[in-house]
Length: 289
Image (cartoon, rainbow, N blue to C red; front, side, top):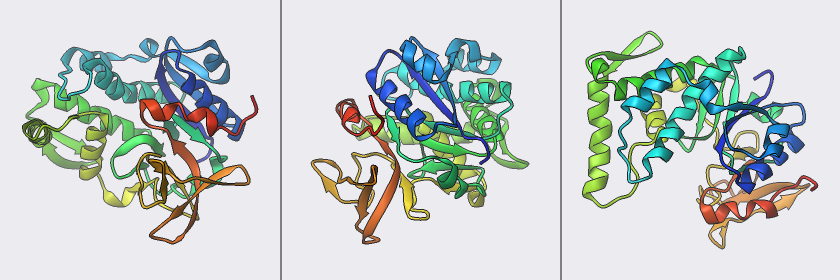
């Protein structure tokens, strides 16, 4: 990855967004920070290059808004906007002629200049976290987002159900087949009383399963002694304390012991997923107020 282009999406005045942006600017002073959203704090607009999300809508994204059906126990508007953001990121990247994106959720804190750790993923088109999560994702080819948006469009567009989903030059499955597979998982969750359903990560997982495996990376793997956290609430083979990863600080950078590798691993980023966990972010920042 050449220039570091960090992409955020956020709606609302939440304090955790400011913690995340301040930390990103502190650790990556030369990076380009882009924020797509609505009703964000003025300081967030000063730290980043801000774009109102409605200004990034296109014909395909408007079609998604029209055709969207919520196959999840979660709030429909929330699930829609989570999927929609990838269309908006793609449109902004193309508007700015960017091919490389590093996208993170607004409840994450960065502790490392990204130039070196992201070089470990230069040989991949994209790298997801924990298999299918794009809460933190490195994209080295903007056509990855074309592929993703095309998958979502085909899933929600009845007139396309008979078409094959094409990745690169390969025919995969017809969209109707993909829908059947994904809806089967959703219906099984309903049958067994499980929460959740089809979300933006479901589409990332489906896309990855039909893509060329040698071109996709795992950003939460331990590479050159460091990793990008999938979720601080999840063990992921690290020591836990009080329900979250047990963090030790070395030179103002978080580390945790990987119990499989039996050694300390540097965390380039921590993910404070969940309402209560976000409240911890102010205690984990390293920038000066």
